[in-house]
Image 1: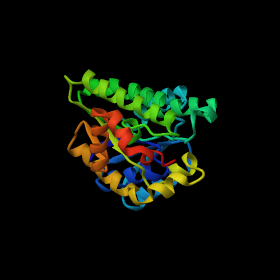
Image 2 (image 1 turned 90 degrees about the horizontal axis):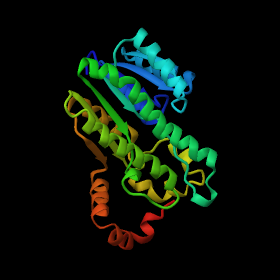
Image 3 (image 1 turned 90 degrees about the vertical axis):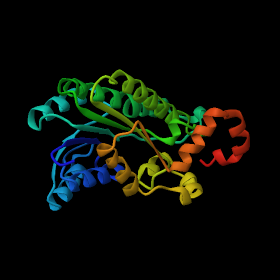
Image 4 (image 1 turned 45 degrees about the horizontal axis):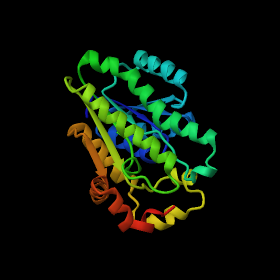
Amino acid sequence: MKGKTIWITGASGGLGRDLALLAAEQEATVVLLGRDINKLKLVQDEIHGLGGNAFSYQLNIGNSNDICEITERIFLEIGNVDVLINNAGFGIFDKVEVAKMEEIKEMFAVNVIGLIALTQAVLPTMYKRNQGHIINIASQAGKLATPKSSVYSATKHAVLGFTNSLRMEVANTNINISAVNPGPIRTAFFEQADKEGTYVKNVDKWMLESKEVAKATIQLINKPKRELNLPRWMGIGTSIYHLMPGVFERIAGNKLNQK
């Protein structure tokens, strides 16, 4: 990790913040990306307080023009990127018939289009150096869809499809591509996704701690693998679902309807 430059989107809080702190503790230079520059600066100050090295750049991942402008600036000011962690994303849990089209478009703009655009922006430098690692934070929702998360699940299915295809495209290089599929994480994500608090209440005992997810994700940098499923038992469950979806849905029944 020492000497590596790691870009992290959605770095102002939650999992992104924990990823940044852990990377900095291991002597990486961290580039913090997010919409709220003031919150990014707070994380940057935390890292500097620990003796680490971090830089903050305001970036609206849902705006392609922003991505082009900011990535060019970072390359000029910081240099190459060794690891990109595409962490930014959000969800809103609604049934399709009441979902707002504006929110649907924004979820795809941030969770999918922005992720692809930023990946596209860093790949040429990785190809040129024949090294690099892209880690996409997807979700178990991208492997097993559930009621009231149809749009959010669709965005994460797209992220996994993109990640798996990209991995094959760079197969003859030294560039690594990883997907991280966590279950629900105890972060502010659900303040927007689950405003009624129903889902959080129903799955509280299964909630992952952000620091543990961050730790497992950072370990991928030193020991790359194609996919990380957290918790492990949930990954096994989604594998069974793909083998026998009809049977799984019948057996799981209302257990899938936690939102």
